[in-house]
Image (cartoon, rainbow, N blue to C red; front, side):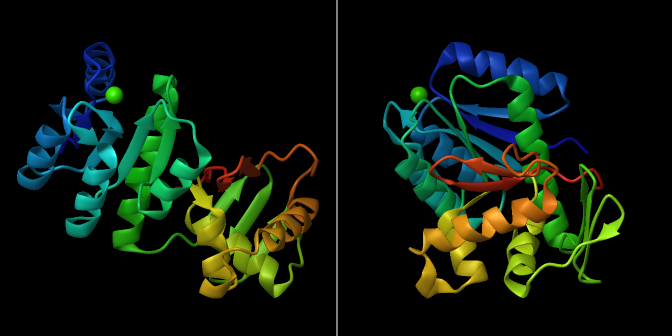
Length: 231
Ligand code: CA
């Protein structure tokens, strides 16, 4: 079964490049060059993933994101030339799965698409509970964390934070999402908690905490735990 991707992008050249690259990967493409076309296709066609530009001639891609989130759960990757952090955070909080700033490499887009599709897939089957990357092994069910084969002791809050990132491994999680899920909805402004606990986690998990390879910072937006080596 081939996966159907809806590409909403008004730049004709970029659209053609992306269509060609995604077809090579085996995706079936539906394309829209405006917000109204995108809305119509999203409502009436069967789509597994949406790649969404924001600056469209007849409106903002954000409108389509809101529409998709109200009615269906397929992953949405936003592609935009806008770099404003506030906007990235808002879109992620509104349910976009990831955000790529133009210009981006096709390889990066394909990797983010695979992660987003896998997350939606595992979400439907069972939650992700096993994680392995760069010498770190996490088993959420067994409540076990090992680094290079040695058991690691984490505090309950450190474990909760790591578990939240494991469940979204490969994807960016915003500060607000992390604070709400680990500490509670009333703590979403307490970003200093995150800095403190991420520092502690890095000291325990990273070979070189000052140059993290696992717990990556998405400046101004949030954090991303690198993709797991086990599916
Ligand atoms: Ca555009």
